[in-house]
Image (cartoon, rainbow, N blue to C red):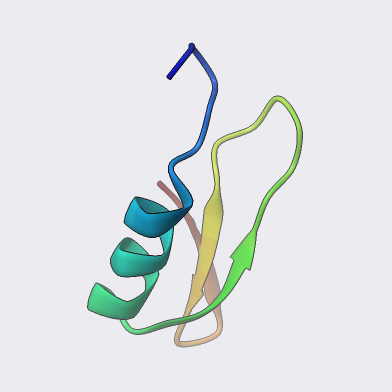
Length: 42
């Protein structure tokens, strides 16, 4: 994978492992997880 690409399987696994409820994906920024109401960058 090239620079800046996201592996969706790994992203979903990280969300589940950390107890996340949402994944926010924006061009040019790292993915963000909503965990217990707070947004946390990966």
